[in-house]
Length: 93
Image (tube, rainbow, N blue to C red):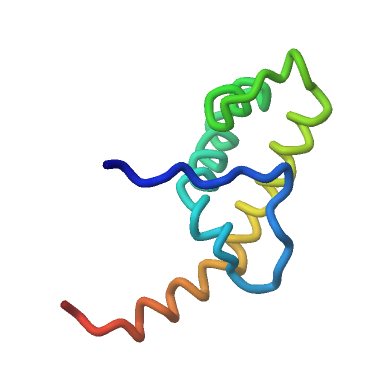
């Protein structure tokens, strides 16, 4: 059996620390940053990464994209520090 698909919210929970939502959506955040770097149109990113149709709900889709991309940027500027600290305190297997 595969892993369950993480629940997608319209907006990631705001916190000054990593949330369980951040941890569940790390791959999505990285893919959003890659799409931004590659110059992908936000509508294409929403369709491919979120499975949403921006033609049906353009404002909602744009808001979802912007909120998650902002959180992805927060992860690159602040959240990653928690991951580094955690990795330094884990014993090697």
